Image 1: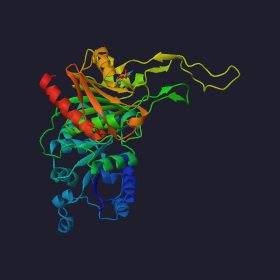
Image 2: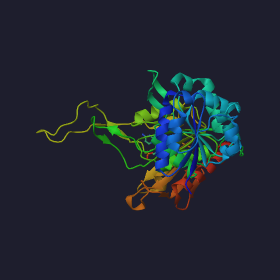
Image 3: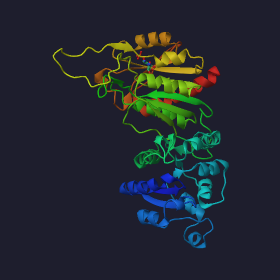
Image 4: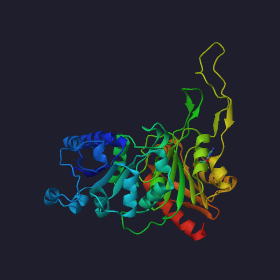
Length: 409
Ligand code: C5P
């Protein structure tokens, strides 16, 4: 059956993108019922939304005609997912406080479905402690978030607060509908990582050779992203620092996108303190030392020599940091002597746990969907059966939740 979306359009300059969002959802066979807030109606007209959704647009809480056709409680539940796009600071504040003084806030309070919010506001409003507090409360209540993105804003400033692009919102909607999130529904028991902050790195890094070429590796980000998602599902506040990947941002996770190892380290340090660090990224060990401003050219002197210098070791830096998380977890992707190398790495990098796996080409792990891992700690080695990367993530997160509890970290 086609999926039904209840779309709440808040008031913001980015509300025009909600019209494109409706088109994209309908192209994918979803039906969309729209609710337009009073402020939203200042930016898009009910007529455009009605035309694109092919359905009546709901605006009033106390509308006898609307209540006669479909009561607001029914409206709040007759959908597979509730999406707020754009989600303004005001709407988020109302939802965090449990207000119910207009149709949108009442629906958010009355729904028994998952809610995905795509925030959009001026960067100072987004970064304001009040908004951040509200977002943390809502995340804790099980609300999912996509964005906001970073970039130039209509107000002329530059920074976080931009509404995610319609296709990014579609990807988050599809992930939420597919149950690609284990975030508990409103009112459910708190997860085992509730109140914990987790930083996960994922994907490869790209190290520039010149303005168009780079050194990379085959990491897809699937395992790291699955861990970030599972940690969010367990109730943690998650920061995912990802190198360039094609897998979508997991819902309910704050994503920071970087390219190089040095940028990744900077983003990780900026995200500290945390309770748990999981370094699942395949960080390039080396980068080209000399920054080449112009594209390297073929010439009579033959191929260029790439003078490589070592990148910072992010895992080792985090494990010896003044703000060291209580639990520091590394990955060891090896093609031979998997356990020996992992044990050496555990000691050398001073981490608490190494998840070791064999990535020789025959295993298909790099870029594939399954993984066979060994958990290496000071206490010994535990080998898990071959599992999907999602299941490895869930089991690992369960283990991490037990370990933080046991160690009181
Ligand atoms: O030494 P090796 O690269 O095999 O170690 C892998 C582990 O170390 C992974 O957890 C990876 O994220 C981390 N690492 C890092 N910074 C580097 C290299 C690896 O954080 N420069």
